[in-house]
Image 1 (tube, helix red, strand yellow):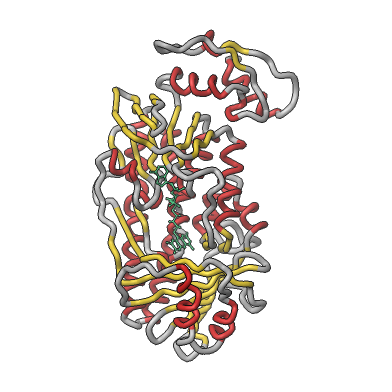
Image 2 (image 1 turned 180 degrees about the horizontal axis):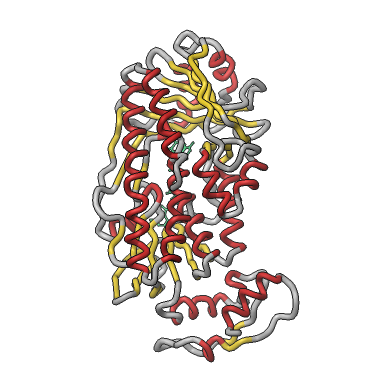
Length: 432
Ligand SMILES: Cc1cc2nc3c(=O)[nH]c(=O)nc-3n(C[C@H](O)[C@H](O)[C@H](O)COP(=O)(O)OP(=O)(O)OC[C@H]3O[C@@H](n4cnc5c(N)ncnc54)[C@H](O)[C@@H]3O)c2cc1C
C-alpha cells in the first residue's frame, strides 16, 4: 500500500496506530523540494500531520488528480466534496476570511436535494432546515390564487424542498469538505493561470504556486477565475431590486407563500421551526444603494402596499435584524465554460434571477456532475468537454426562464408567471 492509500485507509478507519511514511520515497519530486517525512493523522487535512507535507504533495504529485478550486461557496464546496469522494486531492482558495458567514436564507429545491442526497448531505439539510413541498400564490386582494405542489425528487417520504439559513448550509458543506480532506485557504485568491501541457499552473495571491490537473472557478457571479481564463460574459440588470429580512416563522407558514402586489411581489420562506425570511421584489427601479439605517423602515413601507397576511409579516420585520437589498443580476456564458484544464461552475458560469430559487441547485448539480464526468473520462479535457456539454442547455434554460418570470412579474402578468414557475420546476425535475 502506498503512502496516500494508506493515509486514506487510516482516515476511513479513523482509529488505530499511525504509521510513518516517507513521502519522497514514493512520489516524484520537483527542484527545490526537500524530502519530507509525514505521519497520517485523523485530525489533519489530507490525514497528514504537517501542512508542509501537503504543499509538497500538491506541488510534487504532478499529473495526478489534483485540483485548485477558487471560491468556497455552494458550488466550490460541493465540487470539492464530490471530487474528494472520487479520490481527488483538492485545495480551495477562498478570498473571504474563515469567520465570514453569509447571512439570510435560501430554498433548496428538488434538484438541489437530489444532488445533495448523492453526496450524503440532504438529510443533514432537512434536519437543520424546514422541509416543505408547496408554493402558495396569493393575489393582489390577498385571496388564494393557486398552489404548486413540487415534485419530491428524493422519495415520497421526504419533502420536495428545504428552506435553510445560509450559514447552516455553509457549515454542512464546509464540514463535509473538511472531513473528506479538502483544504480551504482563506484570504487568498487566484492571481495568474497558465496552461502548461496537461497541467494548469496556478499562482495564488499569497505568492505560492500550484501545478494541478484541474482549476475550477467557483467564485460567483463576479468571478475573477473566469476573467483569468479569458471567458467573457456580461451581467444583466432587469430593473428589479430584491429585499430579504429574517423574521420569526408564523405558524401558518408551512410552505413558500408568494404574494402578488399592485407594484411589487413579496413572499415568505420558512427556514426552521422558528425562523423564516421575508422577500420583496421591487419592480421598475434603478440600481441604487440605500444607507443601512433606511433599509428596515423602507422595507416595512413597501410591504404596506400588500393586504392580508403580509400585514402580519410586515410587523415582524424588526429594525434590529439586518435587511439586505440587492439588484437582480443574471449572467450566462454564451461560449465555452472551459479553457484548457480550467473551468467555471455555479454563478460564475450561469447566474439566474432568484424567481426560480434554483441558482444554488444548479451550483450543487455542477459540482456533482463535474466529478462524475471527470471520473468517466481518461483525460481532464475530455471530462470537461462532457461536463460542459451536459450542463449548458439546462443552465441556459433556467437563466432564461428566470428572466422571463421577472418580466412577467413586472408586467403584472402573475398567472402566466405562476404557470412558467410550475413548468420550469417540472423541467428541472428531469435528471441533471
Ligand atoms: C437575493 C437572492 C436570493 C436567492 N435565493 C436563492 C434560493 O432561494 N435558492 C437557490 O437555489 N438560489 C438562490 N439564489 C442564488 C444562489 O445564492 C446562488 O446561485 C449560489 O449562491 C451560487 O453559488 P456559487 O458558489 O456559484 O457562488 P457564491 O455563493 O457567490 O460563492 C462564491 C464564493 O467565492 C468567493 N469568492 C468570490 N470572489 C473570489 C475570488 N476572487 N477569489 C476567491 N474566492 C472568491 C466568495 O467569497 C464565495 O465564498 C439567490 C440569489 C440571490 C441574489
